[in-house]
Image (cartoon, rainbow, N blue to C red):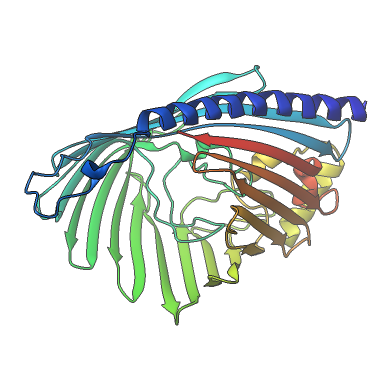
Length: 410
């Protein structure tokens, strides 16, 4: 059964990869035929020509078609494969220097079983001539965090930004419906956000954020988050360069609600802290190496986890990878990452490991990226999960997952 599943996996991967390759080659040949023209003496630019420059294009697009097929080795039961074909379309337009609009839509097909379309972003923006004042309205994906693996300052709900679980999941890029106003003065920026919060079980209809940021030798930001009728939460971050190669960053958040459900052993607590500190080294010859430590007060302590372990062993508690997407299960984590520089022939290697320091379970990820030209690239990814049956990454349901992805940008 395993050999048949693997054969089916490679057959589907080859068939759809061939389809994308054909489309890419057709597009490249069309572009070449349109752009190619014979050179002659008239092509030399006249330095004394005062003809006004052509107005820049008011409409730009960044589009991508990609497909991946993944073979999963299950911890228990039969191995299985998953896959997805996705079309990512982004169009941006501008009117003068003051008005802009952007729309990003993604259509996905999960092995022909679940075709869906999502509007990730769709908004309009205005800014004054001096760029001191600005307004935005629509569906927007703000990015307020400065971390590699954990984004503590992104406090908006519902929270679904977990790239370490699946970096090809474009739904993580879905924004929130909001109205924002910002004011810039030199190195300082202040912005306010009113964000939709229409979801079951929530009496409030909006969530609000006030953010202040500074850019300089030390970059930092501070934000306050509040749902009307509840106490505010807050977050802050800071990053700074040391010399030409070193970067240190830290980030913290204090929230009123715990990400994980309580147990009979949970102590009463009004605030929950997350704190991350990281150090990175980067050079042209060595690539990027980084380390981050996370303290997570939302996670379960030893007594709470012992209670949950009994439920898991009794079969009355299911803790799966989807539940991990809500937040980390325990309190102490370490993340190590290495990214090589891209070689002259467009190869790149990435390796990372995420360690749960409370139960010693680990998530390893190896990636090899290959660019064929400006439009076509591929990625081979292998994830490996280690840990006991009642440890965080042992509960993922997988021992190993191998993914082959092909990307075409146009």
